Image 1 (tube, one colour):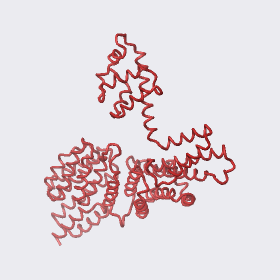
Image 2 (cartoon, one colour):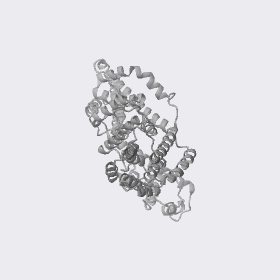
Image 3 (cartoon, rainbow, N blue to C red):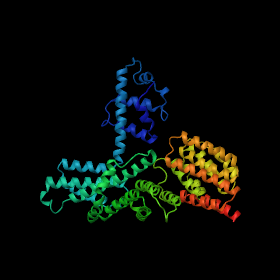
Image 4 (cartoon, rainbow, N blue to C red):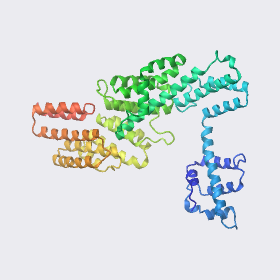
Length: 495
């Protein structure tokens, strides 16, 4: 069979790309070997599937060289050459979409050929077009912008050194270039710090010895001085850097004050960001709120909903290219709304984004949404039935279902089933390595508190009631709306 990386590459080409690739191969500038074109045209007959059974090497050989004996070496070379052209085509597509790199290379070419006037005119044109961050149509992220701008200033510096040394003192772009270098580096490191915290949360690793942590700790005492220096050179560049710095501080300090400062300055200036940066910065907001401790003004899950609503409003909640909403993002939204018993939020979000899930997972999430709306409506038996229909392959779902089963059993007053589920929970915690100590503690406390609720409902004691209420508020202060309602019901019945 025709086994090669070539077919893997060609299967990724759209119909339009396949046509452009044919033009690419037919161009004598890229390919002068007629037999390579013949090989491609034979393969093309079996698009879009390119099934292996249709592409036996000897079968393809006979169509290219009818009546001649199969030659392994020649066929191997033809496949190699076509594979190389496919690689080059992919690079060419990427290059054509990258205005920054095109212009950077063009300036290099002008300098190399000593086209001084053309270089100067092109430089002025590019600085005029890209010298303001408000023009966001031609770059994907702020890092792309800073990188390209530093390259422009660097090329100008080379030009002055080579052809116009007298103007170095009056027209020195070195400060501009170095300001862009520093801004780009710091924004990359602030983003890397976010990645570290996310990884730490998932794998429980120590980040204190990581080079990113050490470097940012070392320069923190002079950060304000750096920001002021960059602000003198460019206010808009400084604003980008300051917002990212606020992001870093919110994760490092973990205080409500630092989180709110980051959130507010980002939302106030959200329009200066590209869609790529908006997407990433919203995720950084989620990381920051997860890290934040000791809430006073913030309602944790209401804040999660607010962030995800902002992503939806700015059209960055689905993935660029396939318009899919990530499974974990959909799950996070509906479970956050469920902790607030907010069926309106669950239903409106589901109506908008359920069909944007991977079709394989859409049915499962539709069932989970049905559970939530039935539970909030008070149809607890039906809610429990919906839970039993879920496919629990998704790790987060395994934990969520445990929480929700216990709540359903309390609502249906099925204490015996609850006790069985409590026994199962011990095995679940013991046999699932993905659970962190925090997950284990939250699940255990959840079941413990519901068990106490069962007992209080059967045999009320005011002292035990007040003690349990305080404990629940301490452990689940940001997610205790359902518990609060249950305490209010017991209090109303007994006091």
